Image (tube, rainbow, N blue to C red; front, side):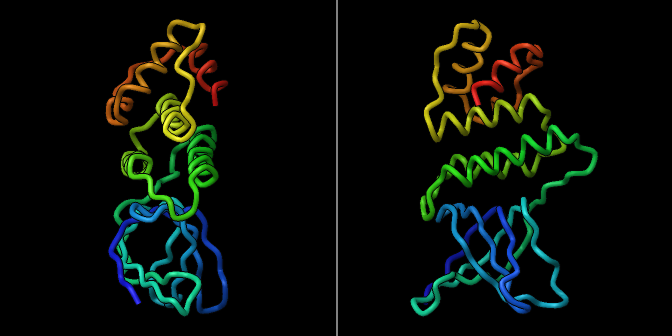
Length: 184
């Protein structure tokens, strides 16, 4: 049996039995995995989009790792957000879930996702689009050439700068924003 301390973000929650809940999570150190934990009546439930710290218990006799010592670091807040913003955030999560293989950690994407959750109230639609493009660049190598000069500059900026720099970008014209969305 092994015990590991790590952080994770919840992608999916499944009720396996009356006393067991299973999660698909994105671990900082282990990538996307399916884990379980015993349900306790007086414990706050874990929901999708939460950034959590915990201990992971592994065993050769069990197919799924078990979670314990759970502590919520930050939580996604959907209050006062538009449907478009929520949809873009969900697409980012789906992109990560779909493209990262199980057991393959990716620290840059994990850090990017946890910053998004922590500062969700300050992130706008443009930054969500740019974030999606950054993830696509990390996972698929987003093309760095485009016929539109402004789109070309933004793509170059995405390729060369960190996520914290991306969050400081100014206003992007509506037409350019639509062209960037088409790249996704």
